Length: 117
Image 1 (cartoon, helix red, strand yellow):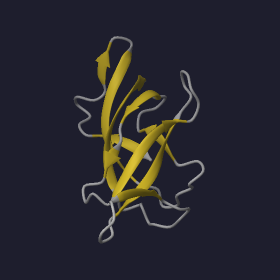
Image 2 (spheres, one colour):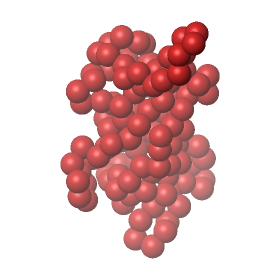
Image 3 (cartoon, one colour):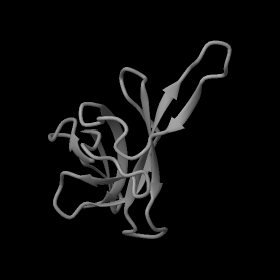
Image 4 (cartoon, helix red, strand yellow):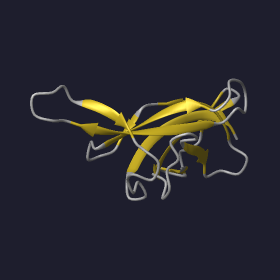
């Protein structure tokens, strides 16, 4: 997923040596449950240090959970997608999406990240 700025006139916001970036992105056309949905920002050279999450789609059908690919500066981030399942008489749950089980390319979320650009 590539996040694009909500408003390029105000984002990123400089906070000390880091920048806050708020943006939207769409899910992947092809989802891999092992690697997740690799996250990047639509700014050249922007390095993500942290992600505020999770993020839920507007229709509340899916949730994207951010996770570091590697711990430490420049380790990268990915999103793992889950679907909401509710059956009569059972407790609603979030179920991990299987590989290519759902077309996420039309699903959109909004995230805030902090990093160095």
